[in-house]
Image (cartoon, rainbow, N blue to C red; front, side, top):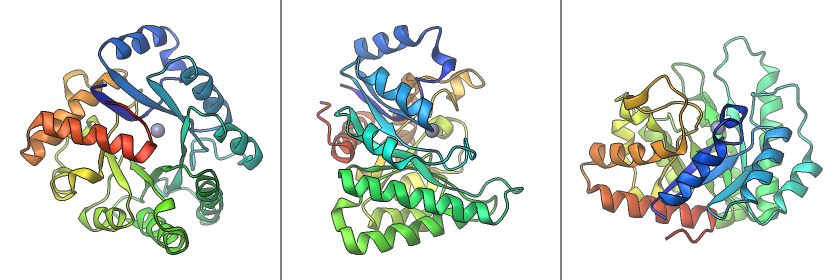
Length: 266
Ligand SMILES: [Zn+2]
């Protein structure tokens, strides 16, 4: 395998017309991917999809606020997590981005996130974390670091995972690295310069590549539906920002995905 998309949603309806073609082309061009569930229905769809293909795996979870009306059915997600193609728990996390959210929304999200952390520890799988701070702050990351630090003390190496679509600064990146987490970056790197500092700062071992497809297409096809092939653009952007050899970055980031998700990709 050449590239690994650590976070995509190709089970979504936006791929219903050409999903099979995309997945077949991924196989031919040696792209692998982690198909991430955001609620019960999309988690079930992710598992059913990845069972059919050796180059795809699934992550099971309830997004912090995509479907705030859906309760977290811990028993159901526990049973989802038993599938051998499920290699991560999430997406789960804390999202304070919406200014209209009431204060108790934070508590609700924390409770649901903690249930995911406990499921990850129980099933010995990494977390796939979505966290978005309120504009102009790092509040959600601060809360996340606090929760993860307290679990780290008790569970050590067993607590692990990835901070998806990382939008934090050097300080937060340092804290997550020390907790043993990776941070994944999207094709935003191809059109915004906001993350150059953090991408340069992080040890290469703490970086994963992702697309979050169908969201955020790269500069070359901005505004269109994204797909897992953009993970190649992400690798090229990381190499360019860091001033490192693209091939070196590609191989190390692939190794990182193997380590985090317990896969054999090479
Ligand atoms: Zn996502």
